[in-house]
Length: 248
Image (cartoon, rainbow, N blue to C red; front, top):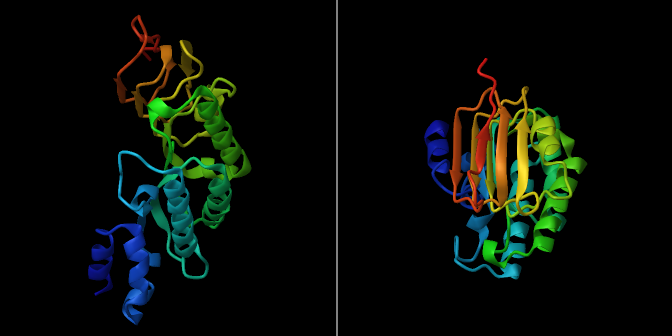
């Protein structure tokens, strides 16, 4: 019977799944038995995925998401392993400091295997200034630096509106994210007309997706596990990609 109820819970968003725990004794423990969790901040907005999002709505959505995460990761309710956690957050530093310890605890307890993390910008790409993008990069780096255990199970990462000009992009994405298999960059750059050289012989990355990023060129030297490369909309005047892959 529990298997049937769990299959139902897998089809609803996480806020609904948490609320079901108050329905009856049988439902009470089920949300903490889900092996796969998807927590998307956009499901907590007043109107899901609106064209324009008010700053206060982003804040309130993150408050609700943090509350749901605390509930789902709480001890002693959470005893079963989470095989995959899909977590989509707005990159707002005040809330990352709440989410970070929750993730760190569940990872350090051995209850989380794979993390699929998406860090969203609360502004539209056209409304985002370079200073805003630089701040997002600092907030992201501060989050990873404060909670390094996240790197241990981070297998998929999606970043939106981040400028890496003041950070070592290669070190963060390839030397630190040692388990990363899927990387998506949306409206990111390392300074306008920058060249991004990727030489990561130990990387496990198999999928690289680039969407409307302001790189002058990407020099792909070594990514031994790469199976798929997708680049949608480039701004370079020249061929934006060069391959220098070792045929071995």
